[in-house]
Image (cartoon, rainbow, N blue to C red; front, side, top):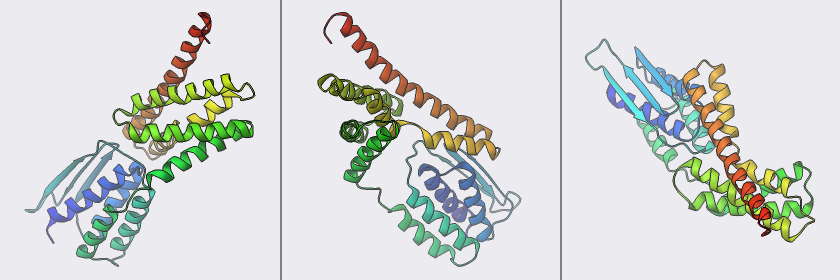
Amino acid sequence: MNTKEILTFTVNVGSLMLSSGAEIYRVKETIVHILNGLAVEEFDVYVVSNGIFASAHENREDACSVIRNITKAEMHSGKISAINQLSRDIYNHDCDFEEAKERFAQIEKIPRTKYKYLLLFCGIGASAFTYMFKGSLYDCLISFINGFILGYFLYKVKGSKFIRNIFGAFIVSGVAMIAAKLFPILNYNAIIIGTLMPLVPGVALTTGVRDLFHGDYLSGAIHMLDAFITGLCIAVGVGTLVSLIAMMKGFGIW
């Protein structure tokens, strides 16, 4: 087997894991397990939140290095789980290189959750969080509709994640305030908080903390910064809407 072919395959596997939302230490361990399972020696692997650097056989004629830049990550637990199993099989010599390439090609084709289900569960999640924050059943109903709107907005609008979070928070807060204005029985605070929960960067924050505990300080700091900026964007969206309504009240419009 060609060293470059093996190293390229291994880095591609790690890239897919990283772009699917896997933790830094998990990506590195997977790459190391695959290279050990394929009898590659004298290798070095360095993984950060948006890139992979790997080299092998530096003291031999077939020495090579591979670099990958990963610019976008969206959670896909199905792909991560399938790659974990593939790496175990390679490490335990239950899968040869040719079979591994075929299985990896199939893993790449694993589809994401259908759009309609994403909208449905975004609405269910928003209403469930609203109930947790002591919202009434009427509040939960509005949160379900609001979550559906949020999911539709995030799916349809492309571009910067931070801009999407600002406008997403602004829209759902506006819907909650308008609903509370039309139906005073509603608790717009519970509706807004519950609907904003799908935007909260819980995965980025958790991943950042885990990376820090595993000694990956650079990646941990990047994830923590991402979580902080995302939270700031949510606050900007809600704060802008609240300030706008306060201004409208001052002019006697609201």
